[in-house]
Amino acid sequence: MTTASRHQDTLASHAVCAAAGARDSVRTAQFFLRMLSGAEYWGRPLEPLGQTPGGSVPVPPDIRPGGFLLAALVSKLARIADRLTTWSVNLSIALFAPEWRKLPSPFTHGIMSEVARAIRADSFLVNPLFNAYFYRAAIHILRRYRTPPFLVLEHRVDAARRTLLAEIGAGLNGSEPDFLAHAIVALVDVAPVARAGKPRDQSVIAKSAEQNVAVYAIACVALLFAGQGKPTEELDEDQFFAVVGALIAPRLPTISTLVAHRDVQGLAKELAEIQTMY
Image 1 (cartoon, rainbow, N blue to C red):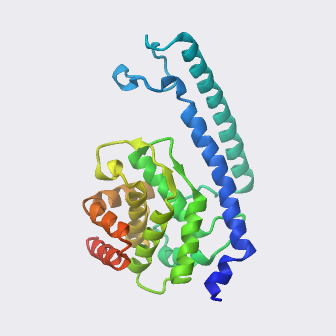
Image 2: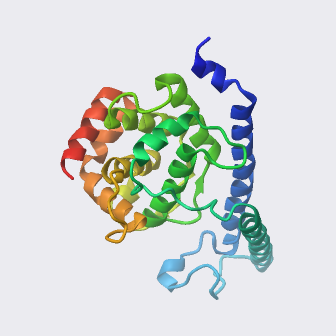
Image 3: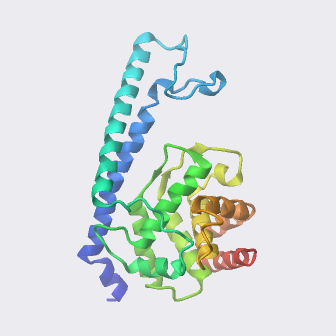
């Protein structure tokens, strides 16, 4: 039995997955609450009216009063439940883990090696660095290109981490593009972005049908570019993700094809070519 397979069967590893699943249960419930909070506006042309959910909108003539009142009641109850859930989650984080939502900065010197080593890390209370970076980076990237609500599942990121541990072992044993190529394929396979929301603009990244490919290509290339410690005073993480997205947009179809064919070597070569552009 290999070290990797023994590691995957440890109680700590399963506990990390269970903890991530429990957090995802809350996130999923909150996602559907936010979907239901707009129930009274479903099927109604808000944009031409210049309205947004939460504002006053004339009742369309084809909606029966009883049906409208029920939809309005569902929306109101969902908004109340969402506020209570958000308040309780925020309070818990503030009390027990104030750094929980902080994105591990891709500008941190040596972050690539730290993320690679972290595929062996198990912690029930604190996200392994691999999980923390790829979970939170996805949320930051989606906020730039898509409209909420969207749903990213942490336990799927953890599944990708464990897959990488079994496939390539711990640490950055090959080149950086090679590690990231494996990471993109593993992450796309498990699809942590379960719901991506609607496109915010007409960009290639926003309108891509494969949001897991687009999101994790940006997250990985950001690591590739920024891991040497670029000064954050010049550019913050969100701005940097936007720059990376614009840079790789013309190459996204090629990346998607390579990922679909699970061509890790070709993907590593593509990432190495992108690296030379920076």
